[in-house]
Length: 80
Image (cartoon, rainbow, N blue to C red; front, side, top):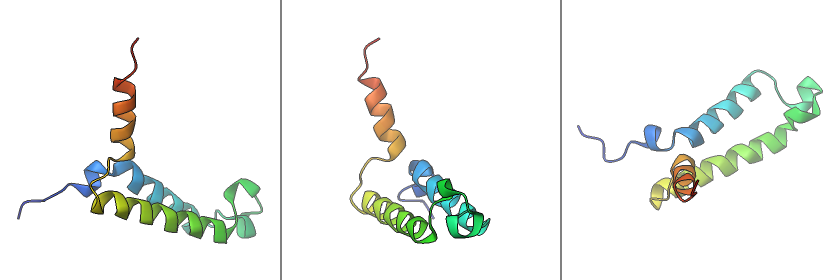
């Protein structure tokens, strides 16, 4: 069966951000557990994940450019 869209390839950066956040939580990297403020509170991390997932789903559903596609377009506009 042929893919209609390569979500994992096109939205690699967005998926990597979600994967990294989940890995941090899995490894107890949140303020209440680690005591390190840069890890952020558990509630904040959950809100970030919800936002990231919603953003990714929106991009997929509406054919929006991925983060990397936007970056490439911005770089292409720069005259050096």
